[in-house]
Image (cartoon, rainbow, N blue to C red):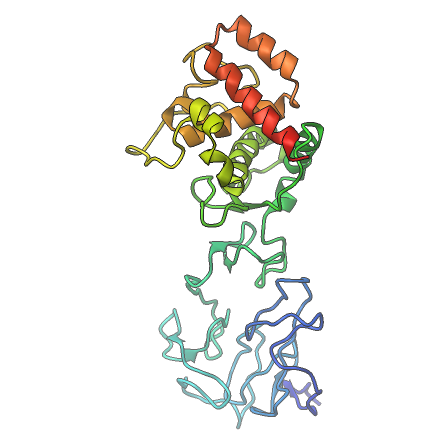
Length: 333
């Protein structure tokens, strides 16, 4: 006797579109983005009357393949011999990528008519998962598609641990920042000052951990945290002392800057005399971020920093920048 391709069962009462943890889900997410639990979308409302024998997800009697796991669920007398657009219980969102003519509902990973893998555009999401490349939002802890860390922090634990220790030693209290690995340029959007995006090319694609530039990552993350810290404490930028040493931080950037930055560097450069690095001279916001980076990576040791400024013959304004930052951090404790 052949094994049945589908199993029929009574629906289990359960709040629809919610994970067992209570978090609201979008239909057909394989994982909960809040707790990471694996999801099984059954035919709880007895809409189609069928579920895949392999994965347990809801399917149609007309399907030849499970659109969720790709299993062969063809049954003679039930499955449609010609691809349909949208059988009962499913919506039509796109045609098969391979041209079989069948319709699919987002986000089916396999065509229910020919069984081939499909690709979808995740434009409605804020970013992409560093593990699978599918769409994720900044608030997600886990990727709803692959179930892995949606932030990518699991790929850079050494760098994050180092940065947190440096902040703690510098006596800078956490302000709720969230580090995310994302494709593209590293940066912080002033509208969301606690979201710190780090270019994932430093990590993704590396064959071994030895290839990852950990010291560069520490410097880069610290620099971007400087932007986040500044945006989070924007009122400070309106004070007379801040404007005197850093300038007007809300002035527009002039053109696209292509200055190369050595985030691995721990020593203050000799030129220019009014800034800690050449990149700091490009804009007052970059000036603060670079000052913040050196302050944190040097653990807030003011005597050591001021002595080095003297050796490099820096202008008095550079001394004032570190002193202003140091005094502000002490005042926030």
